[in-house]
Image (cartoon, rainbow, N blue to C red; front, side, top):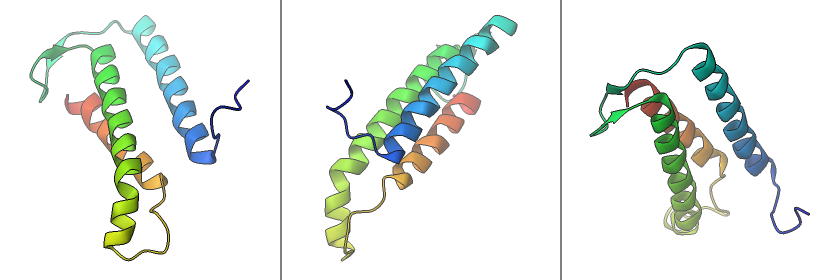
Length: 102
């Protein structure tokens, strides 16, 4: 059923994190309804809005990393492409920033 996708450890960790965030946000919303607020994003957002924006940004971070990793490896004279774990770390930092300050 899942033969179409390459299920490496970083991919499994990424999707597991997304599922855990959705479950956590659902429980948090049930226990404490959200209040709209304005942060550094140019609009008033709720927790769910910030989660969506953070996940969308994380997807773009991963796509950019995959697209540019060959060029970076060549530019830095690396023997192989940089690890996708770097993109996961950058995406995690992005999510924390958006959820806290967005």
